[in-house]
Image 1 (cartoon, rainbow, N blue to C red):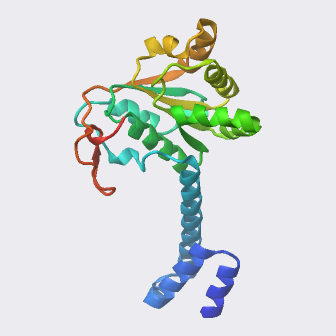
Image 2 (cartoon, one colour; image 1 turned 135 degrees about the vertical axis):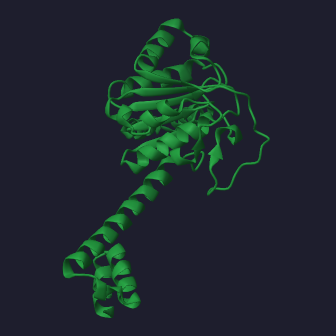
Image 3 (cartoon, helix red, strand yellow; image 1 turned 30 degrees about the horizontal axis):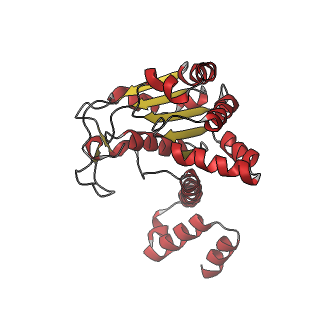
Length: 253
């Protein structure tokens, strides 16, 4: 048995090796037919690889919150349950559609966006979370040090881009041009989730330069699913532990 497990590990069949060792040590191998044992080992290896891939995807996405659809409580009617569950199948990514989440500060916009992003990771999509202010600040630095095109290429490769807290301050000319490039690169090819405290009707003022604002909003809003969250901010409530069901009342942004 030891030699077999060693060979499995050398072939990097880590899930299979672990399952085989546990099965042999527990004595449950006698209950398996050869076909059942083979199925058990293959499924264990598949699960191991899937979980490792998911961990890498979530880590690369750099989410603000560790969130999941299952953690959201819908009882307070802050968000439409049916709409969220429909979007959780992530078919909107297949259709290259966008999601816009708006509502007052502290209502749970960022958590909801992250939950959908995590769901997309679990389904194998490439996802990247970016805070609006930090995104444009980093890209300004990238323009100065010559890595701008590389940064844009990294963003373009993502099948789902999350831009959080859009509109906290008006865009300057450079940030406006950068946003236009990002949106143009993704239009009809991939999806964006944008969260904002600012109603969409006021985004023209945030973006500035009416012609560019029209072009950007036409590409973002046209195919967007709109989620308008209702209620007041309850930031001061206790943040629950990871294994507790999370009410959107308790969440930031």
